[in-house]
Image (cartoon, rainbow, N blue to C red; front, side, top):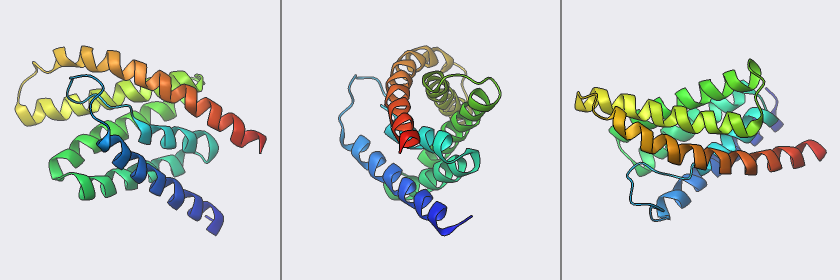
Length: 162
């Protein structure tokens, strides 16, 4: 990996870190715990399309660890790792294997992120009753994923032209 790519990965990771802080400052848009816009997923999505699979995984993993140690705790980091890595894996499959459009890839990322977090919560709380809550998270995750995907498509399009 050359110095230019390493620098770009570092800058995008820092942007994820800033977006995580900004998102933490925004009061919940709805009174539903766990609902977020997913601004950091925008950076991972753009990295996936602009840099590649390996780089997107690196950015997402480092972002999760840094944000977890800075703004959260060990439990929040487990939730973020489960959601973020499952989302990234799904996004990679939908982009590279299924050849889905970027908005669809983003929505899948949002849905799988929610699934990963619910699965961890089910293990921690030892209950499967949380599956009902997944319906609410999937509705909001689809809307947020669509929004992030539309912005991501615009960013990727502009990057390809430059």
